[in-house]
Length: 228
Image (cartoon, rainbow, N blue to C red; front, side):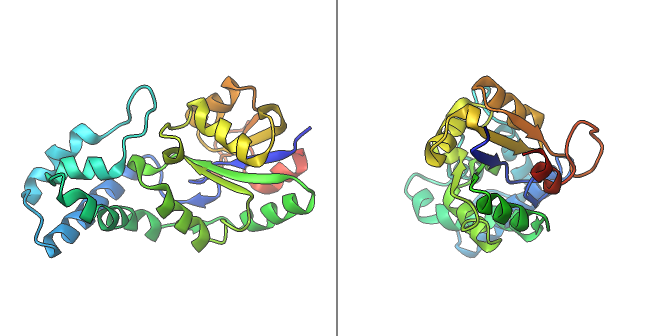
C-alpha cells in the first residue's frame, strides 16, 4: 500500500534546464560569481583563465559523495581559507541566480500535492543540488514556489553528504515521512538517479517524462493520481 510519495525536484516539479543547456547555465553561474568577487575586490583570477579552472570541478565523484559548492568555488577562484567563509553565502547565491531565474513550476504540481494530502498520502521532495549547492538556498527556492508548505518533508543531498542514487538520501526521506521504502513511491525524471536509487532499497519508482519521448513514462502528475 502506498502511504507516501516522494518527488524529485528539477524537471519533475519545476523545470530549470536540460542536460544540454547545463554548460551554458554553468558559464553564466561562474560569470555571476566572478562579478560578485570583482565588486568585493577579491577577483584575482583572470576571467580568461576561468574555463580551465572550472574543468577539474566538472562532474561528480564516482562514489556519489557531495562535493560542496563553496569548496569548488574556492578552488576555482583561488580564495584563501580566511576569505572563503566570509564570501561563501553570497558566492553560492550568485552561482544559483541563473538557475533560479529560469525556474518554471508545472501547473499540475500544487493541485496534485493538495489532492495527495486530501487522500491522506504523505509527500516529500528529494533532490540532488547542482554542484553541491547549499540545501538551505534550495529550501528558499521551494518556499518561493509554494512547495515547502505543500509537502511533509524536503531532503537535499547536502543533508546527508551523499547524492542520489546512493541510498542514504532515500533512507532519510523515508525516516522523515515515517514510512518504510516499500510504502513510498518515488517519482522522478532521471533513470540514473530516480529509478536506480529506489530500486536498490526496495522502493517502487515511477518515471516522468514531460516531453513525451518515453512511452513507458507518465507525462504529467495527473497520470500519477490515476495510478494510485
